[in-house]
Amino acid sequence: MVLKLVCLVLTLTISASASPETRIVGGTPTTIIEYPFVVSIEYLYSNANINIQRCVGSLISSWHVLTTAYCFTGANLDNVQVRVGSTTSLSGGNVVAIQDVIKHPDYQESPRAGDVAIVVLASPIGITDSVNIVYIPPQETYIPDGYPVEVVSWGFESEEGPQINELKKINSNTIPQAECQTVYEDSESVSIYDHVICAAADNTSMCNGDSGAPMIIGETLVGLSSYYASCDDSSPDVFTRIDRHTGWILEHAIPPTGAHKKKFSMTSLKLFVILALLSIASVSTAPEPRIVGGTPTTIQEFPYIVSIVYYYPGPQIFIQRCVGSLVSSFHVLTSGYCFTQAVISNMVVRAGSTDSMVGGTLRFISDVIKHPSYEETPRAGDIALAVLDSPLGITDTIGVLYIPPQDTFIPDGYQVKIVSWGFESASGPQLDTLKTVNMNKLPLEECQASYADSEAVEIADPVICAAAAGRSICLGDSGAPMVIGETLVGLSSYYDSCTDDKPDVFTRIDRYTNWILEVAASRVDGVDSVPYVKVADVTF
Image 1 (spheres, rainbow, N blue to C red):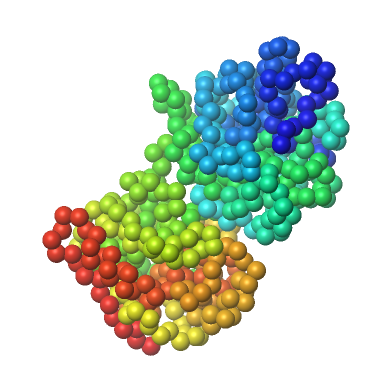
Image 2: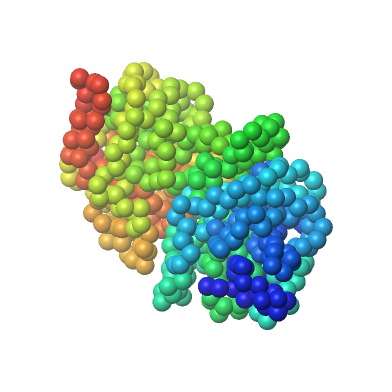
């Protein structure tokens, strides 16, 4: 889609570069003091010697601006500059040159997808009352449908203009992805999939000019304006979903070579990502589900449970990413989804600790074997075997869990226990101590009816669904074990919301027992005697 340029630009017949999309139609005036992370990305049209406000970005560190990759379509980076600390888009504040632009490797212009880019500034930005940094959410943050969001940008009063240089904001609401897919099902211009958020509100819309406008919840950046169909409220606006790219952002938003480390660390991603984990409201963390409700427990009660921790080398932080279960001294069973977009060498397993981030014993992961039927969307075959780099010794806080024989019968209505780290509620804060919750297995047909309209998960024989009043799997711990007695019968795989409105979905271990035994017996390099995975009947 080629964006309209303002009348002045048309009159001057500038053809060097089409200015990317989306300016706010409607909305109310605001100031940079309210949104000090918002920056104007300007483009110099050298043949006419004028600057045009081309896109919008958000400061995520003293060196880095997050915006859309589309912003730089046909652009000469030497002609791009960033204006910070100003309510007006083309005057005031401070102007900083751009050193580099890192586009996401999945970016494509048409149909629009992977529309995110990191701008590396030529010099770091100092923090003031009008210049500051926005939080980014942890990987795979849950954002409810119908949730209120704000979008901040410069823009047009209407599709015909004139352009308004003063900062504006609109209030909008997230909409279900299925609803957005229906609206755009005939479009060849944009891909509506898990990595975007759609939003809509009466009498407001994205329009001509500000690709990259931030969508925020509280103080956290959750989306970037990427695509619109028309400058009215007849169709939802499409935003790049930040939490689907958090890992990539953390890997690449590092100080430029030769940058002064002290300057960076004072206002770096490290500080703000940690704060987001502790305080982000109504949206939290990675990859999926943490227990809502439940009661505290200890590692002595469940010595087979392990925390799978991910290291982000850019900001040098560790985040508890998933949960696993020891099924031998060398092997951890967890979800395939745990390793989505993960660098295995950046992962460690913490065993023998009630706390997910301290204590116990650490092991690196030497190999990960995902089940060959694994699919992210719709979620299916969600199981993986992680091989440790060295064996764990058995103690009172480190033990091994049995797996059931192939095709074990588990009666409907039977009580199961889920063990995980987690949140007290959907709005957090995250708890580092272990919790347990009791649920009951549901008939498969009942679960299928609950998810009949879902394209996100496949409810078929290799899953178990479970539910309990006031209890749910929620944000953060993919792979959390479902146990009956001393036997692992399920792995947390998918949830619809952090409530008991719909059942939670678990990978059914007994449908994969033969596969587990086969791969576990052959995938420990340099070990003559591979430790056995133990099989035991489930005692009802």
